[in-house]
Length: 343
Image 1 (spheres, one colour):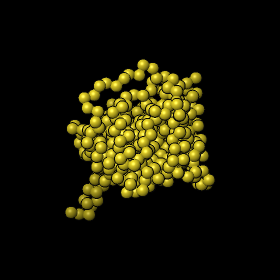
Image 2: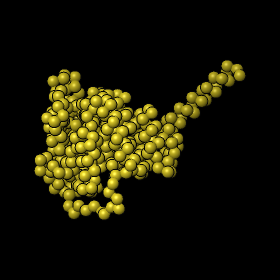
Image 3: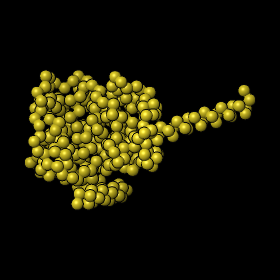
Image 4: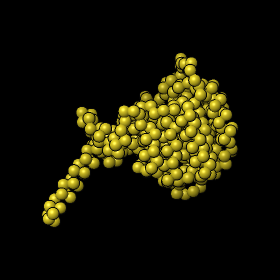
């Protein structure tokens, strides 16, 4: 083959690969003004990796806890690696992924995900998995999460999955092809609106209240991984009134925590201590807390982290304090904007 032909083939290959890359970036969902939860996982990689506490779990972490409060009141640097319907094996592999970048003193896992023992829905899978950077942990998480209709190559080359989005492509798809605005505050998704919890349904009778073997296997792996890395694992149940949290589930988590020497905090049992008022502190009828509710339970958690766990106050660290000064300014700006929209 002549040198001229070789150059021609190389240029053609680069053009094809580049075109497919640009097409993929255009067609992938941007999660900016719609279903913003899909953008949460990727935001972690832009952060300075020096967190004392990392939360992992579903919407009961990223909508119910505010890292700003932990910093401002206690000097605790924290981040929430949460995503919608984050399954326990996804949480475990996100923990593995986190340990590639840093080793926090404490990992906090929300136990609602124990109810799921098998993969659930592709849409939720993608909101967790696509934001992860490629690593063996991401590969294992994809394989553990795929439903029967999913294909691994669709995660490697998302253009295969999203090629039919042509009719949905809009201005935001071009605007955010390469960089997106942050939608969270250290992983916390802020809502200030109020919808009181009224007529909350009771749980249905279940045929079996026992958590599944797969869920327990990953909780064991999470517990062991934390012990190997000298990280204190704390289990929490956020104070969401729905989905229903059964007494039988509570007993299992209490037993597990006791057997494994873990701290377990059920915020459903601490409404008086935290000052939660479900007529004012939820934005969707009790499923998730709004800003006032999240700040209340985070203040309680911060006291536990300081008094019982012994985390130190880092507000005197100049560089970290400077970073948080900027974060708090953005937090207050977003808070002000949302309150203004309610008027």
